[in-house]
Length: 352
Ligand SMILES: [Zn+2]
Image (cartoon, rainbow, N blue to C red):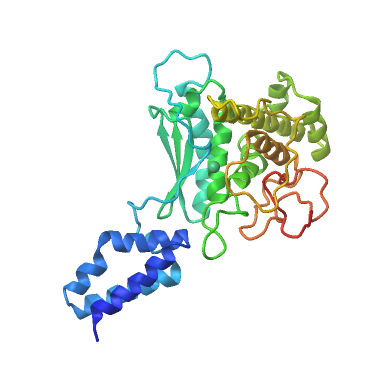
């Protein structure tokens, strides 16, 4: 028997799986990267070969070998908050908006205080990297082994359209990639680890932001805001108590902060992009024929934030990883509002 050939065939099989599944990619990439298989086999040591074979089979069977081996050098898919952009905002520039370093740290502190424990219960570790001096106007989520990582770039915090609440909601969006459930970016076995963009926005207002701010004096906070009638009406439809209505209003208003931020960021020098700033009284009218996993337009993203804010389903009822009904408002079950908007989401059992 030619051991080298056998292992080559196995590796070929593993590599072919890599194209389809993220978790498989991580496991097998680590195997290849470390070169353990190659070294062992070429060394001609039977015991090592058998151990290596078991390792490869475990990789195929479990799909997450990197986690078992504490992989710490395997980069995963990066899930951005905003589409790629060229804007760079260095630290130390004179600014007219954005948030301070102290506010940026506090926003991250507040997310960590709530979610470190929740993520730990799921068997993972939340790591938010405070990249204040990084000039990128973005944030992203990625994984290394069992570390659920969020990279928070200072450029986004310094962007003139951002606010303290906006920064917290960006972090909620990134958390949404890690734990926002269905729908996810595609993978071989029904989905990768990452929830798609629209779902990460929906998670941001529906589960995360309302949890993070729930003990604030939201009634007082929203009393200082100029809340549009659409928001007041929507929040009164979704909730009964003044406290919940205030949380809903603050969530929706923060959603608009981000939608306007995204609008300006995306518009840049591109004068062919939409000229109407996203708002609550101009919801998107487009309907997708299949769910769009990528970043929707800013108006569509506002519609999603708003829907998540007014949906009356409890933040404690988690979304499912496999279907879109659990934990959400849905057209499938007859909800009249608060469901994922049709500008990016196609319900599984509805024909339009
Ligand atoms: Zn994203």
